[in-house]
Image 1 (cartoon, rainbow, N blue to C red):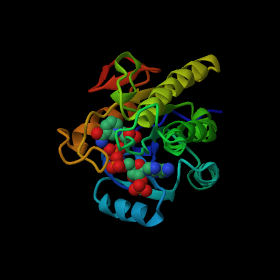
Image 2 (image 1 turned 135 degrees about the vertical axis):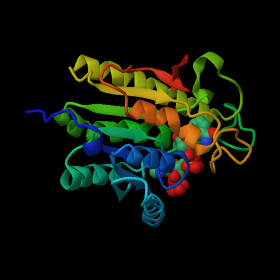
Image 3 (image 1 turned 90 degrees about the vertical axis):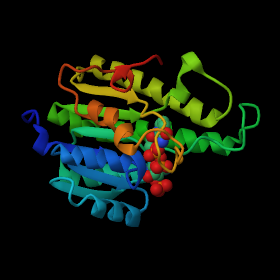
Length: 244
Ligand code: NAP
């Protein structure tokens, strides 16, 4: 039998790549809204230090090791989550690698660069989502947020950064396909959306970016806490739907 739909204080939220940047700020904002946050990072020490920084933000921040580019790490994390926490309400697939440097194009981007971007931005979210979906379905509630980028928009696809652009376009396709699959299996109450946080001052975005992490995380958190009649299968920036 499904448990009651959770209210703010007992929601469990998992955020990937949360040792710094937008992932860390997303944890902070979700914790401040009363979620029980599971801050994940591929490096245990970085995760612990980040959680320590959040100590004043909210009721509870747990940490776990998770490398989204490693299927064994995803399987181990999913097992830990089921055993130790036993529920999941919100998943934020945030982990990301920077746009490929060096002025690369589709004609010369190394295969390893493509593989790293695809493993982090596409295969990781795919494997993690389906590993933890049974917990969400058991709870009869779910919000999945895939942190993407307008650099992956097909309607304005440009040159440079091919691995980043193509992998984020594929992440957006994963969002749309997941929403359709959830609807088809009667789990349309689990809402899944893509978001572009905008150009944000993080290690990835650099110091010249116009947005603070607080501004960048706003729409991520908005999508992670949508009401039951909220949208699913869309791409959002600044709380508004944008083109794929
Ligand atoms: P960031 O500060 O560089 O943080 C990226 C995070 O991803 C780090 O915590 C990093 O962990 C983690 N990560 C990378 N590979 C991972 C893996 N295999 N497994 C687990 N974690 C991994 O960048 P950010 O700006 O916060 O980026 C967060 C998301 O926003 C990314 O998906 C990015 O594409 C997207 N985004 C950012 C901007 C922007 O302007 N900043 C714009 C559009 C979209 P380590 O600390 O271990 O390296």
